[in-house]
Length: 164
Image: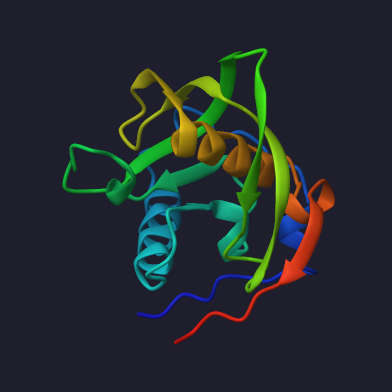
């Protein structure tokens, strides 16, 4: 199974995604979206996370690849209806790219520490905090769920040819 990651200009990337109801989380429909996101994320060696709008589905779900964490958990972390509940006052300018804006990179201002509350694929509520790359991923993916692509606010965006 091959799942295409939609590219900039696709309608799904510019819509605010509605929340998934608690009752919906265990359904075949939502579990199928999560599985398609896993396949799409694993098809891109440079990908660290993916949001549902990036596969054309407007629901509030994103996944973070296990390779982001020091202690691999054996699978991606699923965030359903994520909300930033704490963010540091301190921000930092960071290099950023996106699987839906292939080959383009720019500078973004991101909080250096963020705590997110979400539900997992079983509907259980959890919180996870992080700094550095993890904080950047949280903010980038929640932007996707709000219909925002990093190029909407990045500076110095330029195309960079990546060697195959």
